Length: 310
Figure 1 (cartoon, rainbow, N blue to C red):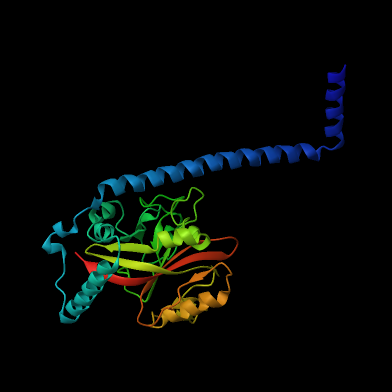
Figure 2: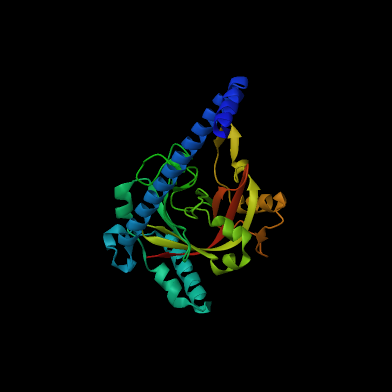
């Protein structure tokens, strides 16, 4: 009798509120679509991460001195002096550090760019922060700055996307400020750990050195700032409006690191970290940028210490 009463009550309720049926059906459909999306999202991310890790196992050269002479360029006198000055900086750094063997391991090894470029010719470099998940090739599309935002290493669309360089930047990491982007993935892959630099001083201190690789060289950077920032372009002063009202990039400037440093400090993030010595016009730096909440970015700024050629 009770069950009959319940069934009748439910029937009466829906007859009284017919729109409720539609609301419930729509809600169920939304839940089903969301669950399916999450399953596909997580699986796609896992597959792409596995791809990166598989390549990393086979495409890493532990002794870069074995790279053939024909793959290296002959520097002019000015370039030769520049390289010698960098090698001297490296020797001074290694002489002062307590873990020389570890630094030498990363300075004298590197990715096999032929293996990565066989998958995608847009690979221009590689970024590695030891003992973190940040261990990826860097891609750059010449025409579209955010082309790899939702495209993977193999060119497929979707997440997790790729670590990619601003297309206004020189692909050889030679600009005063080079900006790299990556998603803030929930499973802590890509650039999710940029947030750890911002939120955790111990993590930042333990992982303050960043390596970027090119075909015949490796750059060593030291983290000098971590902060949140608005979604205003970090090099906004280098853009002007053209005749059609579109913003176009002009050129890089020697004082870009100084202006960027001042803009980041002026933003006023109470949790931010800034080294005591600010960036100067003589410095070169990279910026790791990922999304925060809303229209806020979280960035890590690292200053170039030296470049080592193989």
